[in-house]
Length: 240
Image 1 (cartoon, helix red, strand yellow):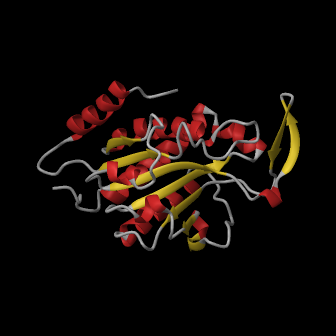
Image 2 (cartoon, helix red, strand yellow):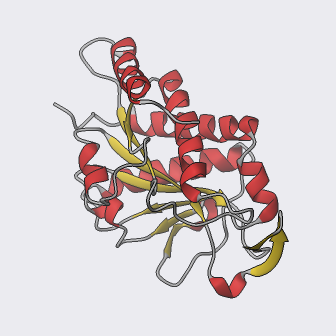
Image 3 (cartoon, helix red, strand yellow):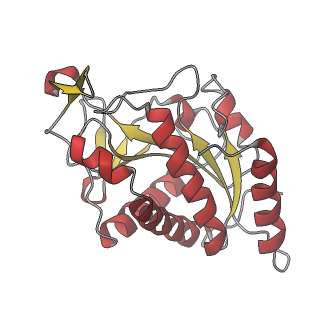
């Protein structure tokens, strides 16, 4: 499912106009699709690109946010922005930048299997969502508050966070699946509060199938959208 340029424009325009009320504009969230056409990211246990998973969920989230009073600015839905610096730049004067990803795992935790006649790899060691923020972000307090709100809402909706990450990550709120990843370009090379959301582990064979379930995607997107709206509506938008 690909959002065409005209649909992207209409999504942004209609959500902004329809939701505007009074003198205060609705919060504006830049929803970024991680990776792209040339760099598809990790491959799932069944060989599907991470970018395809990212785009699918980003589209569901972009549809869910306006229902909670949040306008949307789509970033990289066509998968043509190769620069990690350019993607947060295209978020412009939004109130929050969220980059959508799906997690993989180190090679040491992979096992080989045959999928549809092709050699592939999978893991049984790790599954679940993760939310990353950067202490080097210019708005670390808002980033952390929104990340914790998102993690808590996801847990309340029945989703389980990944209990561990690599050595370059340190826990911000491990119970709710929030971790610091300070050197991620899309998190610190922005003027906005920013999150990177890993919806699940696509190398886990069972979770990969769950992540493709439309009903599950909608339930996860609704929890995430509700939390981000609640967080941002307590803040005065940074836009002029």
